[in-house]
Every structure is written in structure tokens, then in C-alpha cells.
Amino acid sequence: MAGGRVSEMNDLRNYKEFVTVRISELMPFLQKYAFGDFSDPIPVPEEEDEFTELLVGINLMAEDLNDMVDERDRVIKDLRTAEETIARDRENYLALFDGIEDVIYVSHPETYELIFVNESVKKNWGDDMVGKKCYRALQNRATPCPFCTNDLIFGKYMGQVYTWEFQNEITENWYRCADKAIRWPSGDLVRFDITKEKETFIKLEKANNALTKFNRIAVDRELQMIDMKQTINGLQKELGRELQYDLSFLEDETTT
Figure 1 (cartoon, rainbow, N blue to C red):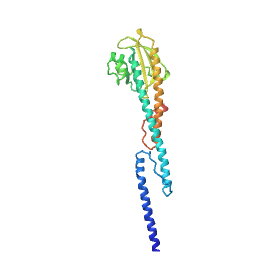
Figure 2: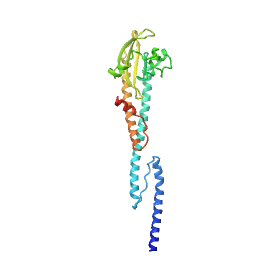
Figure 3: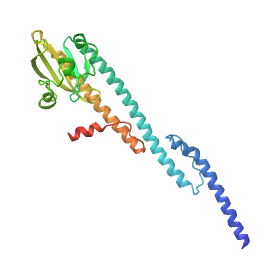
Figure 4: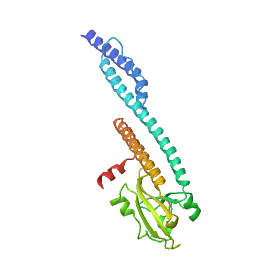
């Protein structure tokens, strides 16, 4: 009986040593996996043992995670390329607007802050216009203009050019305006305004065509970017990581 107990103790000692060795062999791979590197699979011995099923399962999981990381990296690369293209296109179109003698500005419909002004605005009102309230900077008013067309271009005439005339309270000159709600590269819907003195008003067909093209490209690219960001967020979620992009504005749009 004593011999049998000694044999059991030796078997137990040998098994502990076996388990310790196998776990120590796993640790370098598990440490890499813990830091998101799933590129190297764990070697599985040809002779099956108690660890074979575990190793095969970990390798399958690591392979799936590695594919997900590769897909995320590919989407991120595509997103960066799209962002660079949008930035380049934006600069080109803004340069086009700078070359138009008419007053052109872009403002946020909720904050009334000027997001973009062309060279004509800067020549007439100064260089530091961006960030200021449009009604204060352009009309010297303390509150939004009573003749503001935001309710029209973001309502009944959404997606259309709304043309109208008004008399400036400061210069007393009559002006003709062409307003439209467009999607800015930031993703926000903004007010795009082209204004010219009525007596020297020239048809804005060329500018409107450029605006339409810019709006179409900006919206298409923005939708592509949103789709890629959703894909990345989905991969991040599956990897158990914090979402990389805040897309809460999509939920806001669906509820309004």
C-alpha cells in the first residue's frame, strides 16, 4: 500500500510539472494576445494531450481576432484616405468660392456662428469673421435677423436654392441672396449663402452648379466615412474595446 501511495504522489508531481511547463510555454503567446497581437498561433504538438483541445480553441479564436484587427486596420486606412481626399476637395472648392466676387458665407443654423467666409466678405467686413455670429458680424444686430431664411432652407426648401431680396439696414442697398442648406464636411447641416447687390446681380448658375457638385461630393464622401466609422466601431465593440468614433449625431437625426 505504501508503494502505491508513493507512486500516486510521483504521478501527481509529474503531472504538476507537466502542467507548469505547458502553461509556461503558453505565457509568451497569451501576453501578446493580451496586447492585441494575434499574429502568431500557438504551436500544437502532434501527439494529443490534455492541452490539445485548449490550444486549438485559442488558435481559432486568435485567428478570428487577427482577421478582425486586419479588417479594422484596412478600414481605418481607407477612412484616412477618404478624409485626406475630402480635405483636399474642400480646399479646392473653398478656393473656388474665394475667386467669386459675390459675398459667400457658411453659418451654423443653431449657433449662427460663421464657419466659412470668402475673400469678398473679408474685404468688406475684416479677416476675423469666422467664429462670430452672422447677424452681429454682417448686420450689426444683437439678435438673429427677422428676415433670416433658415426656417425655409431647412424646412420647405430643404435641398433647394432659395433666392430672395432684401434691403440692408446699414447701407440701405438692395441685395439678392441665394441660400441653401448643405452638408458640411464636419457632418453638420449648414447655411450656405451667396449675396450680391441687386443692380449688379449676375446669374449665379456657375456658382450654384459648383455648390451642387460640392454638396453632392461632400454628402457622398461623408456617408462613406460614416459607414467606415460604423464598421470600425463594430470591430472595436467585438474586440471589447472602447468605440473609436462618436456617431451619436446619427441617433439625433433619426429622432428628429
